Length: 146
Image 1: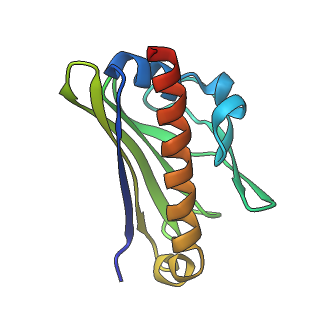
Image 2: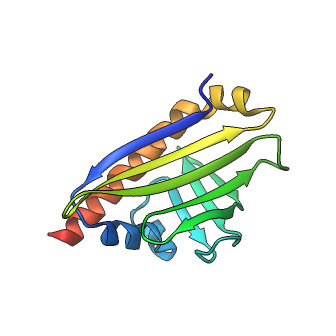
């Protein structure tokens, strides 16, 4: 079983615009249908408090930022209960395609002894949530660009 979820979307906006929206954690509740809240500092090693919405369920987890390349990418690592049970490395990458156009890669790699079983249950919903978030980000970025 594939233990990764990878989505991509083309956004007609600058990488700076997309990065500013993606890293403005305080405004997530205004536009993001999936990650409805993030608090914490955007710096490597910082612990975040993320609030996810899946249907009518709300989940809170506290991942650590493990990668940060300002303007281009960042990633966090979260674990269910303890490391090695069900871990997810969630990441965003912005690739410039042309002037005023980028590709956003939004993905997560899963590992841990329960990863296959849990992904069988939540994989399709999680992919749909990534896509919904990508589309909301695209809409917000392109509205700013107009």
